[in-house]
Image: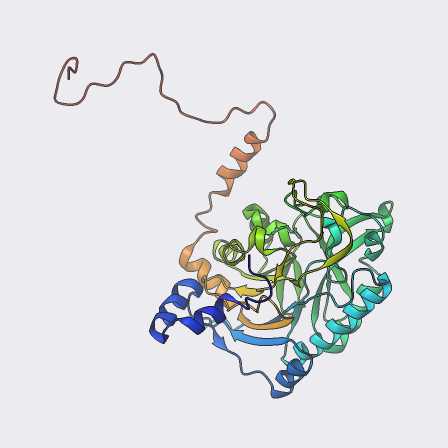
Amino acid sequence: MAGSEWASLEQCLEKHLPLGDLQEVKRVLYGKETRKLDLPRRALEAALEGDFELQGYAFEAAKEQQRRPRIVRVGLIQNKILLPTSAPVAEQVSALHRRIEAMAEVAATCGVNIICFQEAWTMPFAFCTREKLPWTEFAESAEDGLTTRFCQKLAKKHNMVVVSPILERDREHGGVLWNTAVVISNSGAVLGKSRKNHIPRVGDFNESTYYMEGNLGHPVFQTQFGRIAVNICYGRHHPLNWLMYSVNGAEIIFNPSATIGELSESLWPIEARNAAIANHCFTCAINRVGQELFPNEFTSGDGKKAHRDFGYFYGSSYVAAPDGSRTPGLSRNQDGLLVAELDLNLCQQMSDIWSFKMTGRYEMYAQELAEAVRPNYTPTVVREDPTSKPACPSGLGGEHRP
Ligand SMILES: NC(=O)NCCC(=O)O
């Protein structure tokens, strides 16, 4: 399994394929080519100085007579943690705040309207350890915690919607924890929050030790720049989860994640992209980067030796469009900011072409699913009746003899 030494699929293809083949491979793997954005020199220099990758792409939509283009720029940030996981909690959080502040500044220079950070961005992804302290100390109020207040300042300063996925401590309900994305309007007001609906029970993703499945359904947030929703990490494996955000009108669905190569790298390019196609919307898949070492060893319940790391977080953040096209991914081994310019008119244009909403048969599924979840449900399986005689092959008449 490749670690940081393998930079990206894109770099590999570009290095090894002759131009003609490269174009065809890209056409099949990435769909209609996205236009490279001409980003400000100041931003490119700041990214170089700040040691992070900066890429920008634009998705085009057809010109319409009755509607103006609805152009919005989204920014996706992927990053490593900065301090050792043994450093004091407040110092780890503060270091990440400073890093993201600098990257968001560059996003603002690039004209980003909505920015989204990776899952649980203020902390190492410590849920593999199953230890409570000190990791639960990273939890904060979604409404007025330190990180939310930090993001409010960013949002106001840059006139930018901020999607901030954190470990939430819900003081109004006994201080329980949730995996939550806080959505902050470009005015600086907290617009609301969305909670992770599906909690993994796979590999070292021991998140069920810390929090329960979200109880807020599938909220969609009307922002000045479009209707957005947040499907947190493992929710991307659940097509109905994407569907419900889309049913509520999401035009852009962010998927802030933390996932490792051994488990999911071959699924990564497919799932968010497929969701964009199936739901006539844009999807933004964000993954953290690097390897995180924890102070104490833990086991994975697979007979292998105890270890101190989770595996390799492979970055590769990308944006997919409702026509099935997608941007190249950010690298697997570097912090990065991906800027994507979207014309939201493409959502309706693709819906009019493919008509998945129209042909969806939701009533039929709703009815059948309502039946299927009942305890006394019997699956509809048609079987051959063992008592019935075999049918007579046509033309032979009477009993068939070999
Ligand atoms: N953070 C998280 O839910 N990871 C689960 C693994 C995956 O979905 O790839």
